[in-house]
Length: 188
Image (cartoon, rainbow, N blue to C red; front, side, top):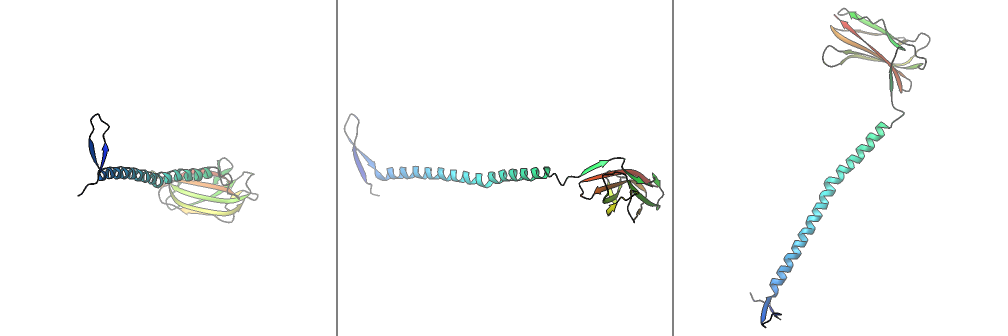
């Protein structure tokens, strides 16, 4: 390959001619340009990595914070449950015979409640966990003069042998506050 040479005068003490190959200089220049281009590509890839991985993580934290913050700040939808003497389970015995019908009524004597929804739930507490055995809802129950619920209906259930918990909850019309009581009983 023919080489294109450039001759320059040496600045050293003895005079002489030195020959420089122009293609060598161009190749070295191209290599440094390629290195600079690769560095720029690495920087570009790093910035794409930040966009692809870091920004979604930040977005998820911001979104999660907003959702949890709004869930904790909801004031109108909170429910207050009061365990008090103003609600009682009537006619519940502590021991029942196997196949004996369990019939209960609920007495509510709190003046803040006039109408609402009554929920009666029986849990099996024989094992390690509470399991729902029976749940019944009585909607639009008004206390009237007696305060005995459910109105014009009955709650009755036959259960097999075991340990049980009966829970009664009475929610006001808005569902924002409630009264609750519970009692254990056994079926032998």
